[in-house]
Every structure is written in structure tokens, then in C-alpha cells.
Image (cartoon, rainbow, N blue to C red; front, side):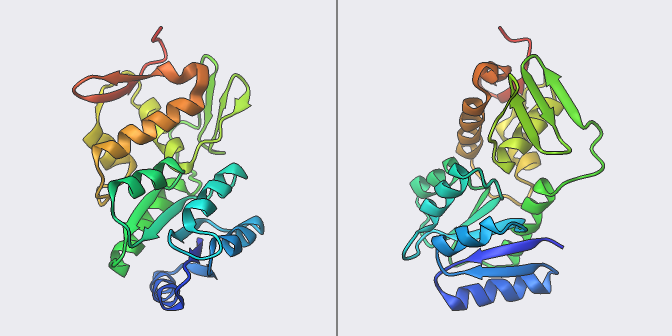
Length: 227
């Protein structure tokens, strides 16, 4: 069963989350700030992080940026009392996979955890395990993407988005469809979420960025034959 790191400076919040996750069958570790979380992550074995933003010593946003700088690509669900669009986009652009606002329903949080893990845990039933398009290669078994032989540091969400686009090569996909399939039907997202991740994904693909084509009025499609 997956191991989840719960990071929050309020012990009662950690206890609440841990109780519901353990009831759902997960194992948990806890940390009271971002620095302690980074220390736990360097030990390995963590499958997902629930990360509060507002914490002393090292806040969640700083912790997330440091994780991605260190190439720690463990999926992250941000947890915060702040609900402004800027904060949501900042978390997503920093590499978060989902965003839950306090006060939250523990059942909803567990559902989000299940959805993220379902997308990011290794699978053995992929119908196709690898794709190659020019300088772009994708290995779904190892969750790695290489551009001109160099590994691209994609977050789990960016990887899932790329694989979904590739598996529907040449098909124009609406933002709503992408939200449903990549973020799960239970994800309460917005079109901007898709646009933000497409922007970040293109940035990682370098010379292959134009493989992801904007279909005006609809959404996006993967077309490696685009000039």
C-alpha cells in the first residue's frame, strides 16, 4: 500500500488526515514544516505528499520548489486555507498535482489521494509501454521522457498529460475532456489548469514543444508532424 507524507504545522490537522488515510488503508509519515518534509523525502519510499502552504521555518511553496529543484518528483497535493486563483496557479506552476482548500472534507481529500495515486503509481497493464516521435521518447513503464537523449524533468501530472495527448495522437481534445481524463471526473478544475500545465509541459519538451498544437476554440492535440 502507498505511503503518504502529511506535512502541516497543526498537529490536529495531521491527526485528522492520518486517521482517514489509515482507515482507507494507507500508511503515513508526518512532518511539521517544509524542512522536515524534505528530510523525510530524501530517505525515499514516499508515494505522495499532502503539503500545507502556510507553515513556519519553510512554507509549503518553498518546499515544493525545492523538491522539484532536487528532482524529487513525488506527486503533491497542496493543502491551504488560501483560495485565490493566484495561489492555485502558483502551486500548479510549481509542480503540484492537485489543490485542496481548507476547510476540507476528509472524504474528498482521500478521494483526491486515490485519484492522484491511480495516475502516478506504476502500472503493469499499459497497452503500449513506449513511444518515439523524432527526438521525443516516452517510456510509460519507467515514467521517463527524453528529448534528444536528455531526460525531461516532468512532474507526474505533466507526464500523465503528455501520455494522454500522445495516446490520442492527431485528435483535437477539449479542455473539458482533458480535465476529465487526466485530472479524473471528481476533479473540480478550471480551463486555466489545463493551459498552465500545457505551458509547463511545452517548456520541458524544448525542440519538441511544437508537437503539442493549440486547436483554437477547442483545446489541444498531439501532432508530431507539425512543422
